Image (cartoon, rainbow, N blue to C red):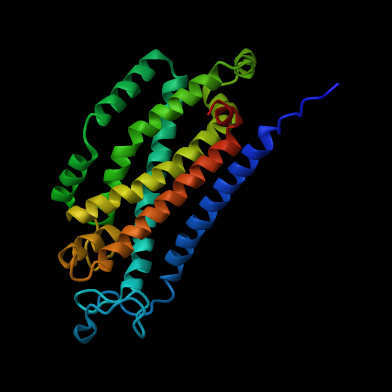
Length: 287
């Protein structure tokens, strides 16, 4: 009797794919973070000092790894400082959204219908306001800059973060161990901190990485439009704004910051997907 060959289990393949995604995300993110940290201690050139005799040098020129811009400023030094700014702004906006959104989401899930309706409707109202409008209003009132961009990102991301955490917390609140904790007359704050928060921590971490990436992308767009980071600070979006006048004359000026944005956002998204698969196996199986 002929025995049909058994199919290769898909589970090891999924695990290898998951590990590869997570590894690539960690490596890319760590590389850009290392470059941002290195910019505090070493820069090949001052990125804000013009050197007119060295203007528009191509990549690989002596002393200039990626060439210079229209004023002779070193592109690689600007990318290093831009990594520091973009990562700081993106992480700052995501972190503030994480803290406020977690508090609001847990409160909506645990403190009754009135709190739930109030917080949910408030989040809906904030979601109806475009993030770009918020950034423009803040720039007009307190001036453009990194702080303005962080506040705009926080206002833009917090409602979405609140809804995600609320949904995850409501799911945890249906579990039997929550019922048992209530039977033991545990206070609501204790249930949230001891039982609910650890069970939504995986969702929080994954959402933080995804909003971190979205924050970098949004900051680049705001700086490109001139309502984000401006000199003497440097960001990749601002470099794109300055390079657009040289497109066709020295196109790599726009290529380098654009490539940096694409790679770091891709790395953070891969990191988020990998963490989701590791921290939430049920979601990974459904996907």
